[in-house]
Image (tube, rainbow, N blue to C red):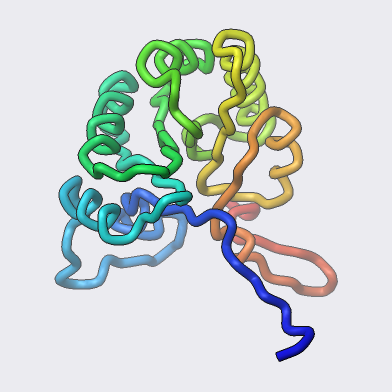
Length: 196
């Protein structure tokens, strides 16, 4: 068809799947469906092998119950077990209170060749200016020590209005479904979390 717009995806992200199995933690009244099968490392590897293609980004299988060092080690082992070639690796970490300089040191020591660092917004601080400060400190340490640029991916962006602040603090990639949970009334944009 002449003049038809052809669109092709430049990059596809294959998420870890953990958040989806934990339920919608920020949705009031959400209940797990009966008979739901638990997500596992083996299902993650099998799904990655059957779905991820060269050029895609594979997000690590994250486990917030592990220490930061063990999270990195586990993720690197699982990336290796997928046996995928030609992909980017997005290392999703939960700092669990670890300061940004210490997080950077762990990355520098254990995963200096990683393609992307992933963090969840709610893990690194609240309100937004604490999150922005964390990102700025992490970005500064990574840039000054590694001598190469590693994109920072922020998962679960709860308030789309904070994305510019986080971007100017040093984050590069954002995802989250919060923008779908806004509603408009009398010319105002509202989101239920602002009433907590």
